[in-house]
Image (cartoon, rainbow, N blue to C red; front, top):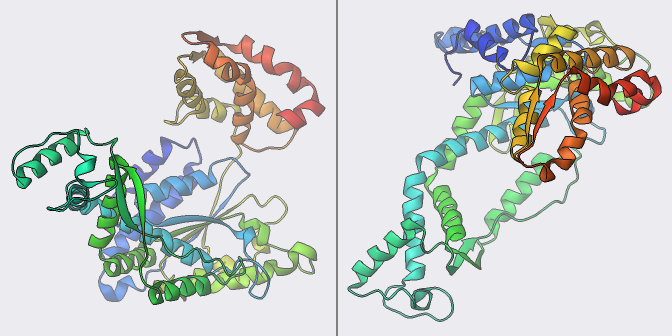
Length: 452
């Protein structure tokens, strides 16, 4: 269930990581809040409220993907990012569009399973400890090899078996037995079957694995390992036994159907023109296949039928060559909200380098501090980096904020390479240092096209 954040609070959270693009942030904030509102409607009206799917239009590197990714994290909802260009029309070799719903459902099952594992963790640890103690101190019968009394030959326990077991448990808690070797019997993982290649037959492959897994007896394997590793693996095995997978599956499907978000990137790449050849041949076919998924249909997954009526679709594309009106009219109608993201300016680059919690200058400073090298950027250095990024984007290809990665790597190339030999050093980077390192490359247009 989505957190109860107001649209203003959602925009505020997005502002911590993404600079500008207020129109897009408002649109996704309203869409997310509407999902929370829908859950509080009477049942008969709730089913009638369809999600307002969004198309984000803007050049690469301006924050389209980041907005959707941060939104899903805020929502705590099942979220998957896919590229429209990797899907093919039914009948062609490649992945069919229904597989995105199967992937989303698989992700939701993993999410719910991890949550349930957290609730049974304490009990699973207790059961794992008991199994370990049985290995280290078998009840009243000696064993040869690893485990049993031989594994405890230097501990010199005295007293009753119960007292010995409790002393052993305390040592286990204190970590004094972590490096001892034990022989553990663990269940083997599922069969490594890969009969079918990636040709849209994922469900058949999954069904075959499940069928053969149920027909064949459960196999176990004995492995020698340290107590610390055995404790972790046994706890995982015990947690899996405690989790009711039927409940997990039902909850995961419910979340997908009511809270799922699919971010469909590069949608402009399937906005093909009539009479296209080669890779264009199935573009319109992919759009036709997408139509029922976005409109709402039932998709068969290994966890049962999943309805997509209330899955929120956020599409994004640069639309350099094509435009949204090149999509088939029916698909355009399924994305009623359109927001335009603007190209980044020099001032935006300055803010991107300094303001967000994950700002690039903070990232590189933290990375180099792990080698005890302290890097400090002056305000004029940040402005110079922004100026160069703007100039290179204008002169070559505009790749938005991604240009900053290229420039920062080039700027800190020498420091990053020599950092292990510079422990304790303090490196100040000002505008002059930035110009000395990058100006020659920027001036040479041919060179900058390859390097920056």
